[in-house]
Image 1 (cartoon, rainbow, N blue to C red):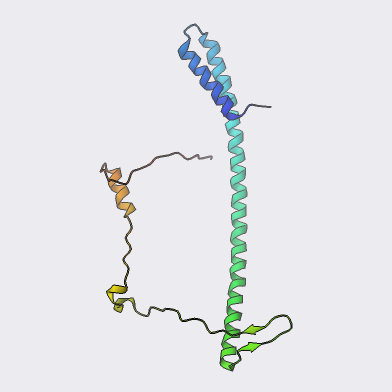
Image 2 (spheres, rainbow, N blue to C red; image 1 turned 90 degrees about the vertical axis):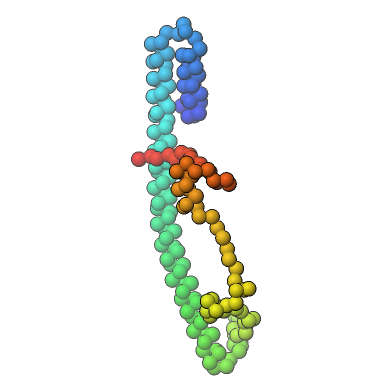
Length: 163
């Protein structure tokens, strides 16, 4: 069984250290050792990359399935909502407040009062909240241009592309 990738990396780095530390090493054999370790590392990396691509395909398939399920769920939710509104409208118009059944009862309840804003432009100012948020696009642009902005910084990282 082959070694884990981190062990191969450690062996490779140790061999590189040996090159710098000891001047009496046979450079040809060290070079051959590094190449063999490098080949093992690359083979392991390709295997891991293949597995990652396989997982990506599974994720894509699950996301497609998830999309189909969400569509079906929304169709059922819309049907439920329509039928509930239809039943309630007809009970209100018929002035029927309760229907007793064997398996369950259907009751029409009055909802508590709720707020509806009809026209935001004519609401008095004392009832208006102003919410502020940072302009992240401008901050990023200025930071990239070299400007120093307290409380903000640009972070860089890596991502892995397998293609």
